[in-house]
Length: 156
Ligand SMILES: CC(C)(COP(=O)(O)OP(=O)(O)OC[C@H]1O[C@@H](n2cnc3c(N)ncnc32)[C@H](O)[C@@H]1OP(=O)(O)O)[C@@H](O)C(=O)NCCC(=O)NCCS
Image 1 (cartoon, rainbow, N blue to C red):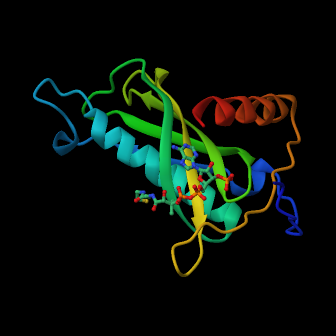
Image 2: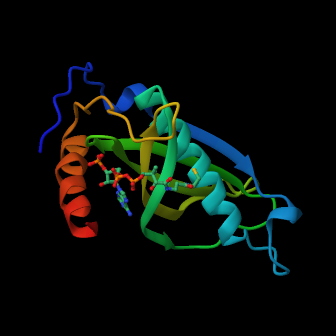
């Protein structure tokens, strides 16, 4: 059943987040490769800030979808993580997160990971609460918006 939603719509740009990190030895495996779990933590943090900015509520991670480690990052690389909301449903929000690595010396930048995170906005009693709908502005945002529903229906 559709829940009435009087909250003002928001665009993806209003909650888009960019986070920059540096890979230190403590973040890597013995070969100097950025640990997968550390990158997931950074991507989770960036997407949580995005979801919470959209909802203006605390939001909890409920799922990760299609996480793909494409290439390794190494000690000393600069990591840029972008998180952008694709669609909000009743209490849940899907966030598209991408991570790039950059070599400081030759400035080469390449995509290392991307994934869809889903968060649920919570009230003070940790119960799901209504979130503002998303109003896509660009063709890419419209594409992500439409496919978010397909992904949600596929998961449930
Ligand atoms: C978040 C939580 C309170 C939601 O409770 P719940 O009983 O699953 O709530 P509901 O069944 O009403 O679902 C709430 C929303 O989450 C969505 N959802 C639940 N499980 C999901 C999943 N695996 N993937 C995507 N969405 C999911 C539902 O579709 C629903 O979305 P909608 O309101 O937009 O339609 C509960 O799942 C929880 O506490 N999970 C642990 C969260 C956590 O500890 N995260 C790590 C720390 S942040």
